[in-house]
Structure formats: C-alpha cells, structure tokens
Image (cartoon, rainbow, N blue to C red):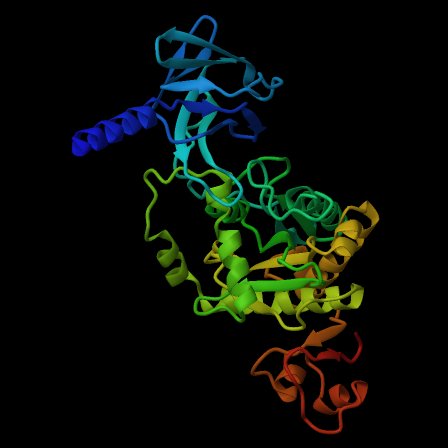
Length: 436
C-alpha cells in the first residue's frame, strides 16, 4: 500500500510540473541597420511557432502552454515594429501578434541562460525587401581617395550593445553606453585628421555578433581595427587603462584569460543563433593569421598604450595578450582597448563625463597617428605626405642599430638625442628620433 501511495504522489508531482505554464515577460525592442530584434524573457523553455500574415502585415508567435507575465505591456513602436498585442486562439496557446510597418521575414531562436539573463525567445524581423541576413560575406569596398592617395581607414568597434550591456558600474553606468560615446568622439577626431577616415562598426544601441564586427572591418578595407571597452573586476580598487592584442597561444595573465572568456561570451548574452554555424571557423581564422598582421598589432598596441600612459593611469604597462574572438581578422591589425575600470567608482564617474571621454579619444588617436606616420601603408595620403616620426617605441627583438637604420639616422645621432651611452634598450622604451 505505501508503494501505491508513493507512485500516486510521484504521478501527481509530475502532472503538476507539466501543468506549470511558461511565463512570458514584456518584449524588448532593439533596432539595428539590418533588422529589428524583439526579445521575450521566458520563465523556462517553451514550444513556439512563428508565421506571417498580410493585409495588414504582421508576424504571429504561438506559444503552447504559455501565459503572460504580470508585468507584460506592449512596447513603444521601434524600427519595423508598429505594435504588439496578444490573444488566445485556442485553449493552452498564447498568441503574440507583432504588427509591422511593412512585410517582414521573421527568424526566431531560443537562448539558454547566460550571465544575468534567463531563458529568452529572440525574433529578428528583417524587411522583406532587404538582403537575407545569412552568413555575411566580405564584400570589400575601396576606401575614398584624396589628392596624393587614399585615406587610411580605421574601424572603431564599441563593445557590447542591445541585449548585452557589458559591465555595469556601481552607479549603474553601462559599458555599452560609455564606449559608444567614446567611439563617436574618436571617430569625429579621426575624420578631422588629415589622411584618415573612421568607420563605426556599431553606431547605436544594438547587438552585433563578434565575428560580424571584424567582418565589417574587412568589408571597409580597414587598415586598423580598434575594439573599445571599459573593464570590470570583482573588487572596485583596480584602475587604469589596458591594451590587448590577439594571442594564438596562452593569455599573458590570469586576468587576461578571464577577460577574454567574459568578452567572448558576449554572443551568448547578446543573442546569437547557433544554427548553421561552422565550429571550425575560429581555428581557420587563427591559421590564416599572418605574422605580419600580429606584428603590426603588437606595434600599434604599444603606441596606443604609451599614449594612454602619458594621458593618465594605466593598469598594465605592457601590452596584454589573450584569445579574443573579436580580434581574429586575419588581415587587419587589431587591438582591444580597456579605457578604464567601470567597476571603480572614481573611474566610473570620469567615464560618464563627455570631456573625459574626449581626452581618452585624443590619447588613442595620438598613438594611432604616431604609428601610421611611422608605418604609412603604401599608396595612402599619409605615405605621400609623410613627416619624420617624432618617436620610436622599442619592440621585442629590436636593436639600436636596426632602429637607426630603419629611420635613416646614424647610430651616434640616435644615442645623442636620447642620452644613451651604450646600446642597451628594452622593449617599451620610447626613443626620440633626430629631426622628429
């Protein structure tokens, strides 16, 4: 008899669990240049079906065994979405109707919990007349030219965006907001610089998958890719800027490894469908990475780090290395800049200040400018109008004699302007150049 009672109890608990409805939270809307994203929080995974109807155009989502959450409310219109309404076409089915301003192609997928996000249903709505948003192909567009040669193109990628806020400071400052402001100021400063132009990879509050970010840089035929971020750590005492480059092996420190793992998880937080993804993509890209690209990344990273050090505090005085997905473009020198620790209350306060954001942008531009004037790409306006570089940052493996030969100066002149009595130099040393 006790066995029968136990079996009945187990059956009752199983029925109760099956009867628990999927609770659907209020939709969040994000508008990108390609599509409008609609995101619903779910209390647990659920079965759903998506289809479209015409006259008027609308996208319909049917969720079996689902109910509306208490705080469910229609969002304000955004992008292609005009209105969101709900109904119950049959018992046990929740219907969500998205009224659109034009015919749309829906693409839906479920996301498992990641960081501070739970289960989610993501529906991307692309205008019917737009190109299919499948695997993006690299279609290179020639950069503009001016008298004397083409402009150097610098791709600026503000980290995170949309569903992925990035790190959040003690006062609630979101990384995605401050790095977008810094990136916009940096882009304006670059566009004012003779011989240069900026391309913003993200210019709004929306999410981009990591590989799409560096592919956009390749499409623009970028000469340099800058990924802009604001660091965070569990305790709020850490401070200062850091500069990272891609490592195809191990990270330079435990902190670099932890940071790369967190940044590489952005696709899980921001929302990327894994359907049809090639698992060997990362390995292929790393195999394609040429030594020249990594060497250029190392050089420009050192220039930017030294410039940031002149501007203010740096967290690490050496360029750090980690396996960041966003830095894996095989043919574009790429670096990631942690502008400050948003987890530090004082640095968070400064990051919110537009004037301070401008000073960070200026420091980054100074380092970029110094590198391009020392290493102008052939056929560019900078190469045709090159001025003697003002300084040289010593890289690993360089000798004083090789540096003198590279800049066309004598070894004795180089020693004299830097007060060097012998040939001892160290990586990271900043040497003044004769005539610079």
